[in-house]
Amino acid sequence: MRNSYIVKILFGISVAVLGLAACKGKSDNASHAGHKAGQLYTCPMHPQVIQNKPGKCPICGMNLVLKEANNELVVDSSIAMLAKPANAQVVAAIPAISAESGTRIYASDVNGIITYDTRNQTSIASRVGGRIERLLIKYNYQPVRKGQLIMEVYSPDLASAQRELLFVAKNDGEMLSPAKQRLQLLGMQNAQIDQVIRTGNILYHVPVYSPSDGYILEKSAGAGAPTAAAMPASSAAPAGDGMSGMGAAASPAASAPAPSAPAATPVLLREGQYVSAGQSLFTIYQNRALVAEFAFPPQLAARLRRGQKLLFYPTSDEDRMLSGSIGLVEPVFREGMNFTIARVYLDGQQFQVGQLLSANVPVIYSEGWWLPKQAVLRLGNKSVVFRKENNAYVPVVVVTGAEAGDMIQVETDISTWKVASNAYYLVGSESFIKINN
Image 1 (cartoon, rainbow, N blue to C red):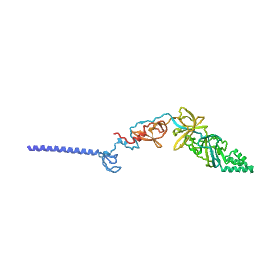
Image 2: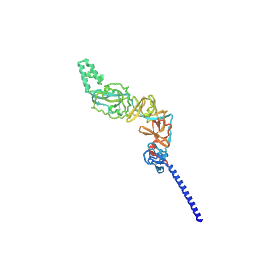
Image 3: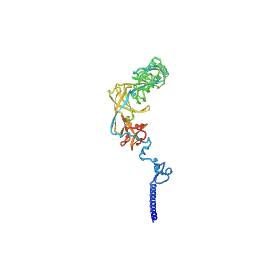
Image 4: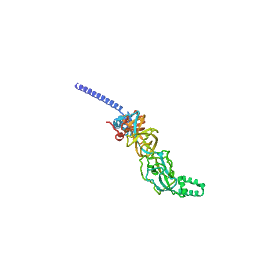
């Protein structure tokens, strides 16, 4: 009886143990099945590929792995923007500013110089070929008077024409007038021709006289002359006594170099040197009226107009303020620089050639937006600003205009932009990505 009771108890315990084990096995199996059902798979090379079951990557064909085993390859979307190249955007803590607009008045300072008026210049050219026997001009910008002897020239052609004149005068009076006319075309004056006929002696040394008053400059030294730029000659002094400068005439339009002070350098012509017919030897500048030339940058020159008033003063005397009207606006490209020359013609002013001037020009700007110069980066012929987008600065090309003081005009519509206050700082010091911890 006792043994039967013990057997029943042991059997009950065994059934209970087996029941608990079966329940635990079912629970573990259910938990494992649920864990596998919620697992995700990703590609080791392309973390953006995510599937809920094993398979192949549709991009590269690799076997997908559990996402938990590929955590180091998963890119956090919060820093995806920061992983762009440094030349595409810059992350920096530099302040951002907005562009200013509205009508502005800026006073721009320009420099100028007193030069000769090319409308009052006279050119001395040789009408015949010959040899310089006597030269009285020793240095450039030597003052000369009208009718003053400049040089004496021996010309075989001129001597031959004089012999023909004497022969015709003795034998055939009908050919005398054409013979005189030929000598006149060669540059001899009527008084000299009459002297040859009266004395019967040939003038081997023909004098050349100055046709006007002024300062003489050797033609070959004209590249350093402080002359104005191309202007048509319109009021050259007429030919006077002597040989009319062997063809003194108003010089054609002459292209002038950069203004500079005159220099009394020795002339290159020498006695005994041969000159050819038509060769320009000297230029005489009259100082009855001078010209003030001012150089303007292209942005400022676009607002200049002929007849516009200009206030200027000698650089050495700021209290001596003068005014004048712009008589000519000429674009100039010289020595690789593009600028514009504005001329103010001076009448009765007490100036000296080569004297430096300064002018203050007020300019009104009613269009565009304005930024500090340091906010605009110059890259050759392009201008770049750094626009703020999503806590980063992106370089954007803009169109710029005039520069006034520390400000620069931007013609591109940037009214709603926030730009970096110092574009050069971003390129020079922070051209790398900054990532917050």
